[in-house]
Amino acid sequence: MPKLPQIPYKLYNEHNRERSACMDLSDRLRILSKSTISFLIKDHTAAVAKNLPEMHRLFALLQAKLRRYPYLYANPAIGIGFEEYVEAILLYNYIKNKPLPTANSLKVTPDTYLGGLSDLTGELVRLAHQNEKQVEAIHDYVAGIHGLIIPLSITRNSATRAKLETISTNLRKLESIIYDLKLRDKI
Image (tube, rainbow, N blue to C red):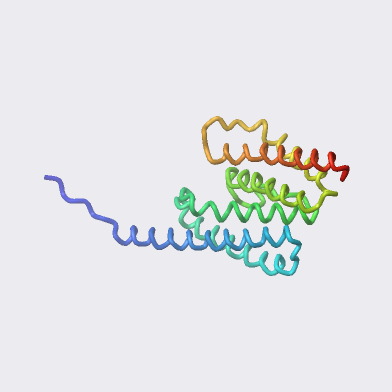
């Protein structure tokens, strides 16, 4: 009879502890990023200025933990915080009329970046509803994003594919807003 295996209790407990810590950090980052997005849409600059440093701190802390435990990247719950962070940073840069950072400069995976970029287009639809004068410029910007993602070869049915399809949906929403404003002679 073979000898019984040794169970890595210490390693298992460490894994659970670090996974829980990363999930907690990710959730805190998600909540803070969502509130920052809301503040950006409502033009609450003081709240945005307060949230951004804390978002960057949580992001860096989570990144450092994941460098030590890279296998935790596979946990979808951890990626949600990263995606919300990317969305908030992209929206901030759009509103401030700055170039959008790249996936490399943000140090996130391509899927995380594309998810944040896709969600950005939804926030731009919200922004368009609030500012009729910017609707056409926002439409053109989202159309530009749509043009950039068309060549991507995502043939599998995945979360990234679903996210990218929302860019098309958001582009149609913007077209509908423009059509409605033209009917009412607002633009």
